[in-house]
Amino acid sequence: MLRVGLGYDLHRLSFGLPLWLGGVQIESPYGCVAHSDGDVVVHALIDALVGPFAHTDVGELFPDNDERYRGVRSLDLLREVRRTTLKEVKIHNVDIVVILDSPKIAPYRSLIRESLAEALGIDKDMVHLKAKTSEHTACERVECYVVALVEKI
Ligand code: MG
Image (cartoon, rainbow, N blue to C red; front, side):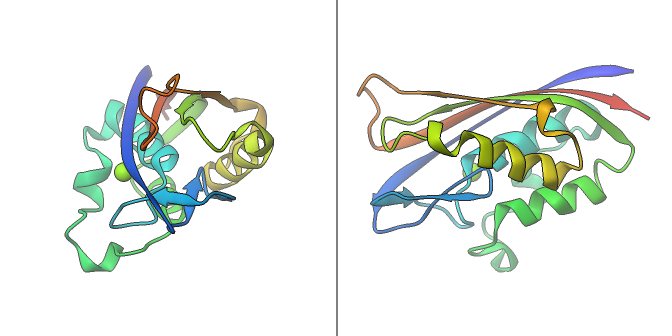
C-alpha cells in the first residue's frame, strides 16, 4: 500500500549559531534556534515519513523538553527512525523545498542529497531538493516542506 506523507518545519535564525540542513553544516553567520541542532530539513523529513503509517511526528518521538535530545544531531534521529519506526516501510522518494534567503544552499544540494540518502538507505536519485527564497519577506527564519512516497512492506 502506497501513501504520501507531508512534513513541514520552521526555525528562527540567530547570529553565532551553526546552521545544519539535511545533516550538512552550511557556512553561515547565523543558524537555527533549537533544542536539537535545529535541522529543519531532517525534522520536516521525519514528519513526512512517519505520518502515513506510524501516525506520529518528530515532536512526539523526540520531545524538545527531553534533555536526552539537547544539541542532538538530527541526522542521528533520522537514522534511528529509519531503523525502528520505519522498519517495515519502503521509501520510494522524497521531495524537499527549503525556503531560506541567505546563504544560498544550491552549492550544498548534492551533499545534502547524499547525506539524506545515506541516512535513509536509499539511492541519491530518490532524494530531490529545491532551494527557494522568501523574497526578503522572512529573512529571520528558515522553512522546509517535504513530501514522501512510502509503502508498507
Ligand atoms: Mg524543528
